[in-house]
Length: 317
Image (cartoon, rainbow, N blue to C red; front, side, top):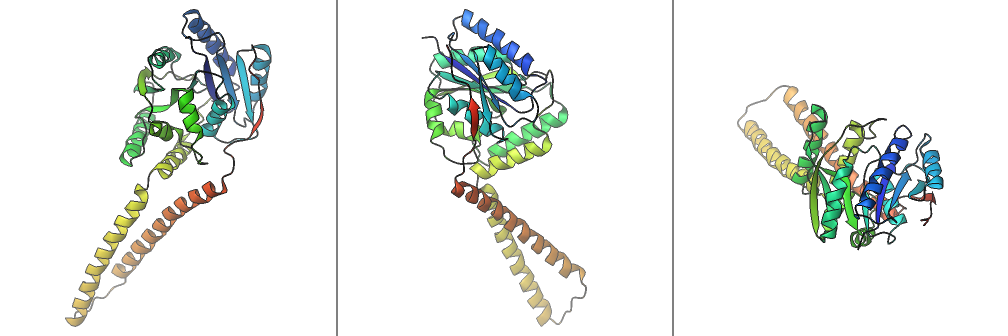
């Protein structure tokens, strides 16, 4: 059976590249259809994540003139992960498999071919994994690989060098819908589902137009969200530090008592102020970390919607 494929592309201020992206995707889909790899009923879905430029106008125009194109407009900016979920869930059950890919098409489209082959062989998830970062700057490569190593060290179940370029089937999408947390870290959640998975390796390409939507600040926020969503290791670090502080305080107490009974006076403000600053700063750091987790609990308890769809395109024949 030839699968019906839905390509899902979250878009935020992508007017500079959207026409290029759409032309390439349509040509690529035509080639896949001619080779019998996907059905003629396959579609391309662009999710507008509260863009402030003409992104939605372009998507709407493309959807009006091309039945292969679907558009989903979110009521405001909800973030890349939620935009991706919106595109997947909006058309859940209408397709056999779904591939998420960024609108800048830096992920190599040719990697979709082995993804589809592994899907036909029985894989429910196929991860697109970068095996060549030669196109990255040293800083980008260093920070990205440090991110994955840190996540794995903190026991967050991510796939090394895998972002959000992946294929999933309807079974995975159904199970993914059962995850109800507001702060969804999809890269960590998909591996926890546990269905058969495979990997496809590819080289990431240069961006043709526009600018990256993940500057350093956003990358750090994304990483922190992933850590606090999946790992309690930072909380354990606080516990270990508390134990270390207790032992150090006990040693200092013994030393102070010894100097008192030995009649030795210790003068000077430096040692006193240094210890006060150290422990006060450490306590504030620990309280702040605990506050981050409590804040996550607060957001989850409110159970507000992850996204709001303002409008979407129907699937046309």
